[in-house]
Length: 145
Image (cartoon, rainbow, N blue to C red; front, top):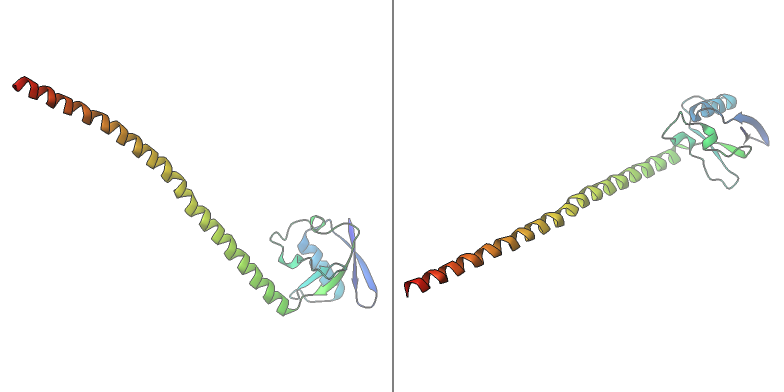
């Protein structure tokens, strides 16, 4: 499929999205005459960035991330925005780690009730033998009288 990329004063070009995200970004930089170090992205008509430059899997097909035959606007990502997205990504990773830590601490607590139940079962069995020796002692005292 393809998308229509708008830029400048009512200028536009078509881009094939049946390629990895990395190649699409390189193509757009080359088309605009920008260096490889420049962060670029696309945004929809509401101004929402697609955040293609943050893709966790740069070899993922761009057609999975972008709707076919849509019109998107070419954007150069400002360094301030990059700093904000880096900060958001770090916060997201911290949240994931804390969720993993909570899961790890919940796992041992699930095994404790089973161990306690087994311990209670043993205590019941131990009470029964205690009754038998007391009967024997009584029996022994009767024989002395």
